Image (tube, rainbow, N blue to C red; front, side, top):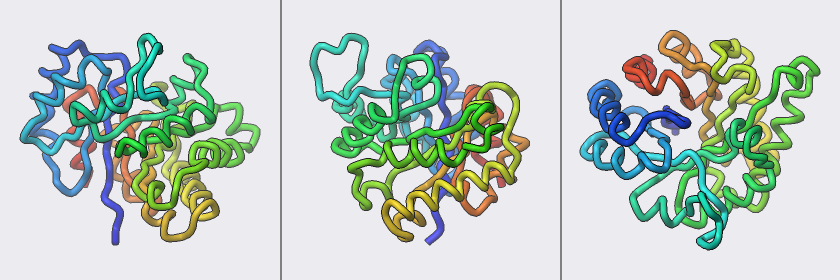
Amino acid sequence: MARKKIIAGNWKMNMTPSEAVELVNTLKPLVANDEVDVVFCVPAIDIIPVMEAAKGSNIQVGAENMYFEEKGAYTGEISPAMLTDVGVKYVILGHSERREYFAETSETVNKKMLKAFEHGLTPIMCCGETLTQREQGVTMDFIRQQVKVGFLGVTAEQAKTAVIAYEPIWAIGTGKTATTEQAQEVCAGIRACIAEIYDEATAEAIRIQYGGSVNAATAGELFAQADIDGGLVGGAALKPDFGKIVNYK
C-alpha cells in the first residue's frame, strides 16, 4: 500500500492569534486536497484559534514542541495532555532550532517521542546535518545516530505511525535546497536505518519528509522520489504558495 504524503507547515515563532486565523482562512481553500495529509504546526498560543478556524476543512493541527512530563513545575512548557485535550494530532520533536538554541539532545527527544506515543500523538521527529558534517562526509553517521537514539524503546507498531523529517540544517531558511538526489539519498538511508532497527515492514510504513527551503517550484520533483513522503515546510507555509506545495501534482 502506497504511503500517503504528509505536508506539514512549521510556522515557527510567527503569527499572532488574530494573524493565524486570517492565514488559515486564506489557506483553507488553497490546501483542500484529500489525497495528502495537511498539517499546520503552530505556536502554542495559536493552537486553539487555529483549531477553531480550521473546523470543517482537511487541515489537521500540530504543535511545534512539547515536554516529556505529564505536569509539574516546568514553567513555560506544554504537556502532551494539554495538546490532546484540544484535539492536536501531531507534534514536531527535535527540530534543529530546538537542538541548537535550547540545548535539546537526542536523549531528550527520545523521552518526548515515548511520551507522545503514550498519549496517541504522532511525532514528527526531525534530524539533519550541518554543512560541516556534510563536507566531512559524516552525514549518514550523524543522522543514523539521531534516528537510533530518537527511536530507542519505541515499538515497531508505534514506529510505523511516526513521521521523520529530514532537514539539512544548512538548507533551513537559507534559500538553499538539497538537490533532489541528495534528499532522496538521505531519506533512503533513514528508511534503511529503520529497517535495521525494526524490519522491512516498519521501514515501508514509516513516512519520511524532506524539509529545508521547500517551495512550490521544488515540491513536485522532491515528492516524486521513492523515499520522500512529503515535506516539512517553513517560510513557504505562511504564504498562499503553500497551496501549490500541497497540490504539487
